[in-house]
Length: 165
Image (cartoon, rainbow, N blue to C red; front, side, top):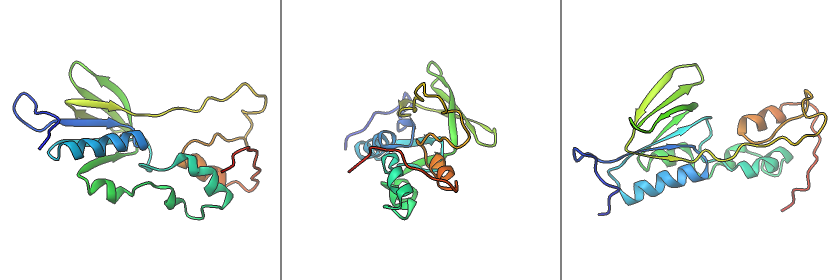
């Protein structure tokens, strides 16, 4: 059976993945496929691992009525592969020499994780163009599930998009 490798003491490799979108979850799943003994942890900044961010406009438009269907895999499906999900934790420091990651939970708690290998799959961040009015109260950036929920909760929703399928 193929293996990622063992540490110096012969223990299974500890893989730490930062990022719970497609790239991070795919890396974690592939690691478990290659080495069933590997300890695989995924650090996810929000509560929505492996969701289709590209599907957010379809949910907001009503074309996708249930936001749960935007998940490529459920949390249970991911964890069934032996992957530990750490939700609502943000990576704040990587000590590459000491092979340690420090995260911070939403309530401010610091957590420390050791690793043998690390994958950083945090994706992209939206860039706001220099357009007057972007700072106004009812102007939203749509990039996360939480931003989607905030936008759908507003009483006045206007679409401005050339997005077609």
